[in-house]
Image (cartoon, rainbow, N blue to C red; front, side):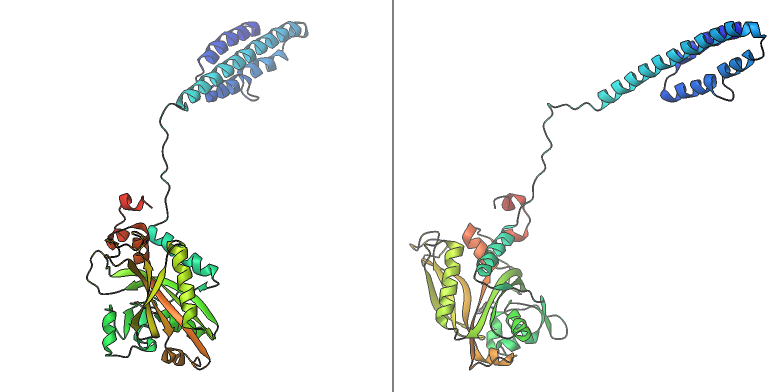
Length: 342
Ligand code: PHE
């Protein structure tokens, strides 16, 4: 067979094969098969041109070049077709149906207890109080003894506690933090201590074995009951509205003397009497009092020089009152129908 025949055969088969190439990879393989430096079919033919007699070379060379160009064009055409095909496939598979309804990402929100806690903290931070936290597992000393509640004292009845082994218990009031704070610093003290408390109470609409308190403590020279009143009146107005009135009822806590219950006029009925205030027109929002001199002495403060006041409020109670929640258990049930309302 002459070289010219070889060339024309290669031209024909190459074009058929190229047209059949189904992928970019097929095309590359074919390219190597034809144009490969070592074993390419056309490369081999071109090499053999050198062996021809001189006068035949230009003619054959020209024919070879033509074949080469034709094949190259076929390759280019096929590559273009394959690219269009794969592009079309991708466009089809990645199509976005803009008429489909969107997927809704449900945003989370702050739990009512947390937001109530934040509001309380913000009010006292605005008054220059710092925020501290103490342990939830306490010794008898911090939860009772140092707060002037000796062992076997009948007032221990006020706190039904969960006792652990070896004199430890789950704290039943954040008042334990009064002692931690005073032990760790000298007056002046101005601090609030938010945290969880635990009590062995029977569970009902207003009692749960786990709940939150915010304790407040201020100790300095010349602190009087008037300071306590002013501070807590301001708090009540900031928390429940500027129209609220406050009242201080005598009360008893072993670690404060005198002690007082802080009452606000009912913000549901404006003091007229309703279910929330049990027809009294007043709602108790926290316990408070002047820090007992024995407590000050116990932490090494001089009660002749320093006086102070303390208060403690239940966060669940405040949240229930301000948002009209009628069952404390709702806070712990994680029922979205409840949580979504706040
Ligand atoms: N710790 C008291 C309680 O749990 C509340 C309180 C705190 C009272 C500080 C007076 C002063 O009921």
